[in-house]
Amino acid sequence: MAVKKRGVNGNSTGNRSSIRLASSLKSPVHRRELRHLAQGWELISDAVSVMDPKTNRLWYINPARRQLYGYTFVQALDKPAKMLNLRDLSAKILRSILTQTRRGRWSGRLLNKNSVDQVFPVDLRTSRLLDAEGELMGLFGVATPGQQYNISDEIIQQLVEQHQVVLSRELYSMLENALITTDATAHSGSHGTNNKRDKGKGSGNSQLVPGIGRLSARELEVFTLIGRGLGTSEIGKKLGVSAYTVQTHRNHIKEKLNLPNATAITYRAIQWAHGGE
Image 1: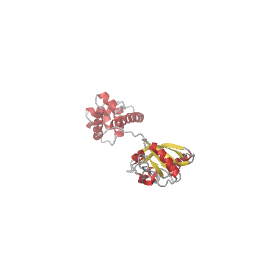
Image 2: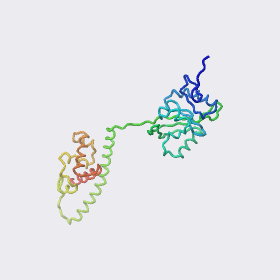
Image 3: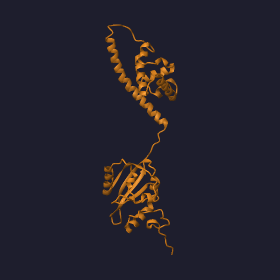
Image 4: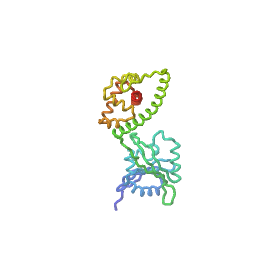
């Protein structure tokens, strides 16, 4: 009669050789029941673990959990499960998770780290693990990697353009009110003079935006449309050019007018567009 060889921690080899249990799990009954349950857990893609309900040390991890976190049996078994959490996870949250688990169950999203300190989100579900007699045998946990989105440069550009449109319109409204008030004050102090402000690229506008004369005709057109509240895509459609070309003009405008950022471009453009009307 063939006798199955015994592996590390008293585990039998053969078709169950991958099932390892922590040496601190002393109860033969619980070891037998846990090994029986683990046969199904070995085959699923979710990361499964069982902890000691008293010390919170890992008694069992399935292959999916080893793959997810990168820890070997030796590195994980009999070690505290909190080694998977980030250092800044508060003790209060950990106590809350354990308390709710011991009472029945807990579920939520956490940031975990693997063996090489890579951080990733997991959706964790925990519950009590009972033996055949209905007594608490361990704390059961199932971790599923959270959905992670790869945002392309195109999507980022679209978000930037949307932000520019909103920002341009908000600044336009604010500056329009401020400039109208300023204009009214200036006219009231002019003692009835009837001098009209130059339109378009007149000298009055040039004083509002130093260096405006350095812009090319196309750059000035783009600059004016920015001041009228149009975003990069809208300007591109209006001028029949790509958003990339419009962004290139924006970069040139920024350099030629010596402006620090996109907000400053919008601010000056609104001044220019308002002064030209």
